[in-house]
Image (cartoon, rainbow, N blue to C red; front, side, top):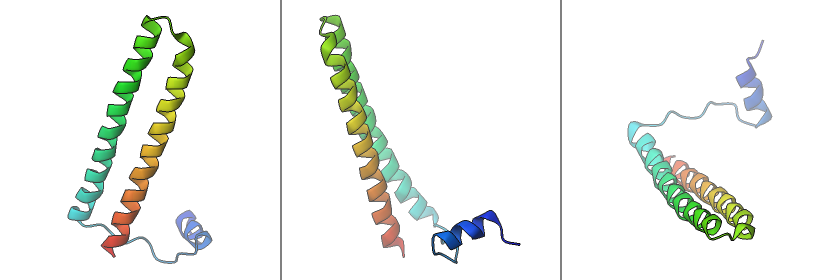
Length: 93
């Protein structure tokens, strides 16, 4: 009887489990994550400050647009982070 993991790997066309990462590789991936977390936090602070200023000045019509911009930029940075980590993983082999 196959485990759920084995069945999932078969569906994805892989038979071997992913190779274990060394501590240096884990550190590299963590550094990439930290870099992008910092970028996301920076954008959140900036755009949330703009939202607060817009509310304070009574420009309520700008708030949804700013929040949408924040969501787009966060999603974009998360995608860039995953792409950078995949590129790093590819270089490990």
